[in-house]
Length: 257
View 1 (cartoon, helix red, strand yellow):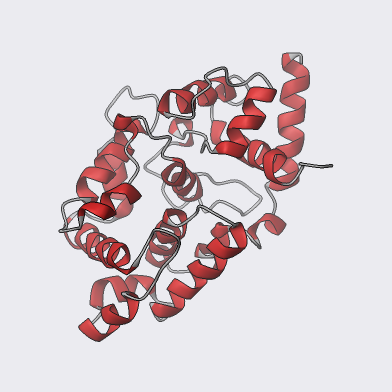
View 2: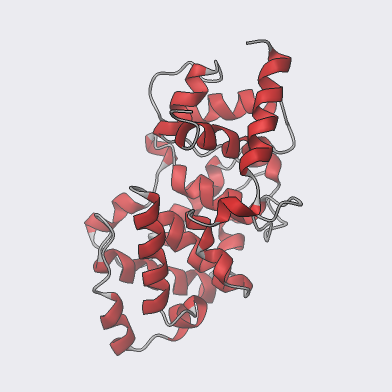
């Protein structure tokens, strides 16, 4: 496919899926149920952290977790009493269980009490001259692991230094950083440029990207994320992650059409 035709296709599909109707049925619907900045951040991180498996199950369990947090996630993180935390200990989504959830809450409390919040933590990992959010994700992981945790919980924190695609964290960063007139992504974080965002890479996105010639690497890992994102920058160097809507939508919704 010619470059001009490929760009037209990506732009068309991005416009189709980057719309308010996309919110319903997607994990991003969970942070969209809040208006307080910190509630959006915390619910968004938790929703993204359990975003694997069937989308309907992810959304259902995400809203269930918010209900267990009294639909005030920031207040819950900062002020939950032992009885409240005991209630949370019963949460399960696939391999993400109550112990993992309690660890996430404790780590989030540490981040807001001692590190200036989630945006500040991610921003502190971006050094001058960096071309993407690799350092930001590594720094976030480092700070998150300051809180005591079981060995089993570490697997829920993606590590691009070990080759992980960090799909769910890249998706969360897209939610927080990107901002446009369509109202899907929040654009809350002004200290991180959308130029640095990486395209979230999962099986669906990888399959479509390879079919379109945007990704040659066979393995889905951080090197593949960089390759894909760099190719997407050819079409929009200022906002490459917006094409996540096109690639994900084509992989999930266009199948069988």
